[in-house]
Length: 185
Image (cartoon, rainbow, N blue to C red; front, top):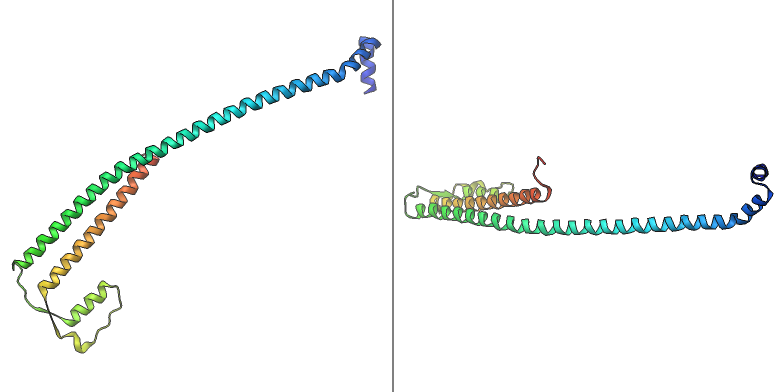
């Protein structure tokens, strides 16, 4: 450092060097103040821009939620109407088949055995089969057309459940497309 001061003294003379050293603290304070002011001004500007961008992002997200809710409402209305129409059609078909049985268009041919009924009921409940062989061949008094009527009701319930699951899948898929866009995008 003394070599640097000696060099400055040669260039400017001792009086200039003395003035420079006396005003050095003021220059440093002014320079520090300028840097501090510039930093604060830049920081404040960046902070305001960040808040502005954050608010814009928040508004965009709120609009996306509103749009998704609107789309979901439209999808639900359409899917539920289609589902209800399909279930009503399945129920009408069930009644047509049951009426066919009742009107003796399908005559009863036999009485179902107790073994048949027992195995059917166990299978319907998902149980392991167990049956008393002595009772298996006994007539139950239940006619084959009565069993057919119950089978038609069961198939109708299965079809209604299938339609409900199909409608639920449709609702999920359409909401996914509504939120995330088409697959190809």
